[in-house]
Image (cartoon, rainbow, N blue to C red):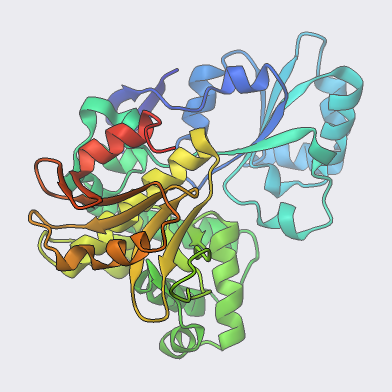
Length: 390
């Protein structure tokens, strides 16, 4: 499968094969496909589902016609239409009743896409009673990029396809943050106070990869604490924010219970924070951690389906990621990892609960320090995507 990457200025970029095989998935059943804007859903559909009937609910004429008469879709479909795509399904949730009927009576397979699941999750909407599974499309991954992958480029620009290959990524990222405010929040009516949400969004970005103090965020963004909770839910529902829960199975050290939050793309974080992540700074380390969170989430959603978590004890030890119930991963943006950098992994190893303990770093070659493997980023990613951590 290939996807034609063409940025907003119309500049042609390489064809990138995506990991989601839509024809294979739809040969078995219907699917919801969600992902933030510009992750490539439309390109993927156009280049892998050629010849299928598509209803784009961002087109005014299509939206008006189907909102006035949802049954029109059944009238238009012919016996040759075995697969049907409805783009931006969250704009017209009542259409799902008709979709349900067509799956049951005609055996049609639907791909129902959207950049937000908010209205579907929060309204009393027909979610097809298990007749459609859910998949997510993420920004580009290490495995998808192959020879086009460059770690420093990824940390500077993020992995949204058009921005990764853009000739002006800074401008495109700034435009993306603005379009997100307008298209995702305002258009959905999730909040009417755009200035307040804009202030909150920058403060939330500065809390990326941390345990959030909602009171402090409210004070900094000049909004009520209850509003902060609501705004974080908006970010999660519109797929811009990932919730990383705590791993609670440690026995010797009491773990914290609060989740950490990561934005879905490191380039978007940089734009919202108005920062450039320079090597050697603490911000660069946070960027590397956010990027690896993206790879782990993508691997989970595309292949493994194993849970992700992190571990932090009340005494202050913290390990960035736990994959399933077997692998601990600490991230250090250093070319020379010291013994002190491994103290949290050693503390977690004392629990004798996990299979392996990894420190992913900028070192050039792999080495073993006691029971901890210190390894380069690329080696970690190669092994991850090959299924070596299971």
